[in-house]
Length: 144
Image 1 (cartoon, rainbow, N blue to C red):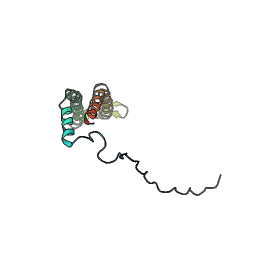
Image 2 (spheres, one colour):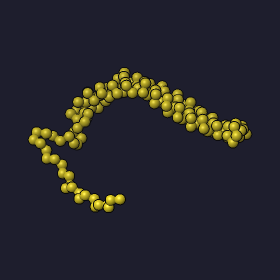
Image 3 (tube, helix red, strand yellow):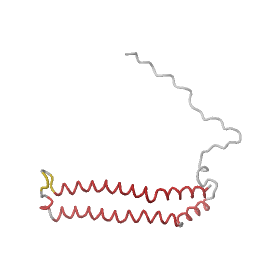
Image 4 (tube, rainbow, N blue to C red):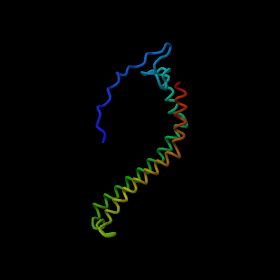
């Protein structure tokens, strides 16, 4: 085994390069979307996007998926809790070996969570992502 050597000497401290003539460094709040616009102008751009039909469609698509699915999942969860409180004998009923109805429903809660996560990601990918990206690019073009 080769002997361990000392770490190499550290190089000189890094210093920022000197600015070139006529070049403005790209730092600070004056860069990025809307850098050339006043606060009022950029606010108006965002308000016009918020009021646009494309943005309203994206919001509608999101809400028409999330609210019903969240309601169904909440009802499913509360049904599990209510069944545990109201019918403990039913929940103790064996299904297979040491697994009873309570364990089965509890594991189905996890399976439902993963299923809903997959459905949400698929819905976002197929229904909203492309439209939202297009709206984002349009907004950034307006802010330049």
